[in-house]
Image (cartoon, rainbow over all chains, first blue to last red; front, side, top):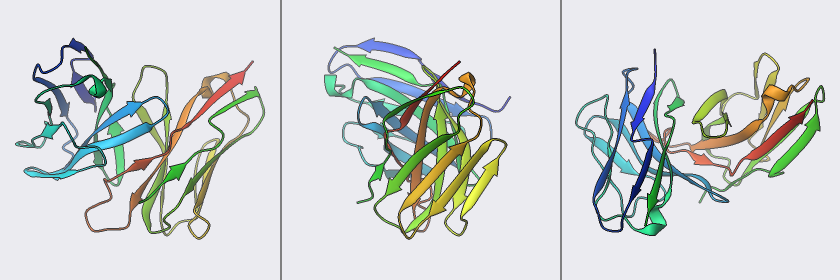
Length: 110
Length: 115
């Protein structure tokens, strides 16, 4: 089954404790992206990647890192999480100009 | 900077009525425009994609139009059903090389279809 998977689905952590949210797709897509969704602000793009080893900033990249070492994986790294990074995070992959979204990761930073 | 607006933020209609959802954008230099559906607690599902050279796309009961000159797109859902209850989001990507993935989303319209 074609899908985008994210782990974990739910995470509660404390300020400053490094964390990684994994994203994996099985559709051989070149494009992958991370978004955050906040009430009243909608979805905002954090980073995207058009291919392996090619990444670019979206609208809200501050406080986040990504890497794209292989086509299927695109992890999101928060080196020192802060409470303002509490949000719902979505990973997406794409081909033919459309995107397929993962189920989301709800992150709470205390 | 591109701004995408969806009005109204919420909409409630009785079953069987046609739904009309609006999306406006400030920069007409777009590569494409997409409509997505989001169910509570779930990710987004792509409904329709309109390339900048197209004026509309249709899929079943859904029809989306695009007017770049006025910066507007409209999603029509015919004969609404309770299963159409969800949040609908539009997103545009800029007209730039290798930037089709740089999506800008509207905040969405939350739709409730009452039986």
